[in-house]
Length: 232
Image 1 (cartoon, helix red, strand yellow):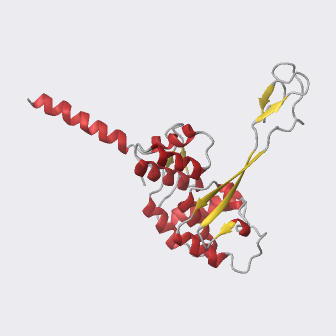
Image 2 (image 1 turned 60 degrees about the vertical axis):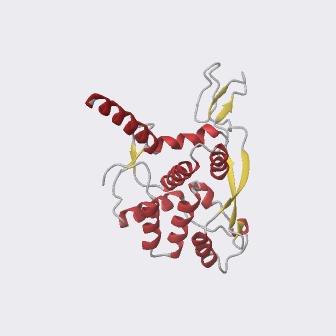
Image 3 (image 1 turned 135 degrees about the vertical axis):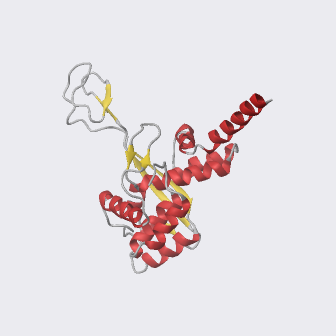
């Protein structure tokens, strides 16, 4: 298979259809439908679902990536061992500013019906998916293999690195489709920012880089103009 930047909607649907276990169908459908982060599904509890109205409350914990030196007050990265200003040992300093945010997102009919079947008999305080991040990665990768997505075929255009299919690939797929539909409508672009839970609008618009369709349209127009002019 050739390199790609995200799985298509058809590929995601094939993965859902071919999944044998209901749990795996729920995972694949939820990621494909919502573009949620890996951690957001794993933190989801039954009480966070409103399946009558097709709405889910997503809780997102974000830890500040900075430490603060207790001696001189300089900020440092969360993995920094020693302060760059005074040399203080920061190994036991806890990063500051854990932030908890939540947002409501809509889910489609297929995902709603799968969740209704899956959570039947669970308690409101129960987590929906009791798996580790790595187990979820393995399920997604296995689903990709079942439809022929093999090896490191997902390209990150910003870094040039290639990756195996993973849950964030579904997030990219949703974002590209949404932005293609939104066009230049800022209100629809902002709606994607809210849906994905981005604090910065610039983060949302980075997904435009994954879809070369707009660039292709302009380059085709320029190409036609150049060569038609040359033929005159």
